[in-house]
Amino acid sequence: MLAVAPAAGPVAAVSVLAGCVAEKVLTYAGGRGFSATDQATLKAVTDATTASGKGFRGLFASAAVSEAFRSRRAVGE
Image 1: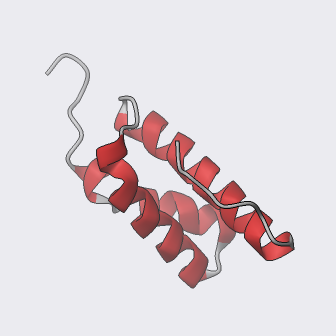
Image 2: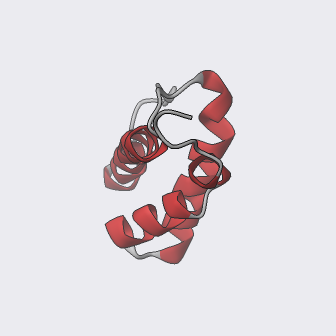
């Protein structure tokens, strides 16, 4: 799980929420558990989502183009 400092207001709370949702989306989309080595991917996805300003739509788009998603293996491989 992403280590987060205590929220200092609404903007920080949105950032924490985005990180949690991004982790769950990457876990589901990748078809595997999330590990500490995936922290860089998580940060890249949340940063891209925040920069795009497109909310959940941007989050799903950022997750879909991430290396973790593009290099996943199909079930049974």
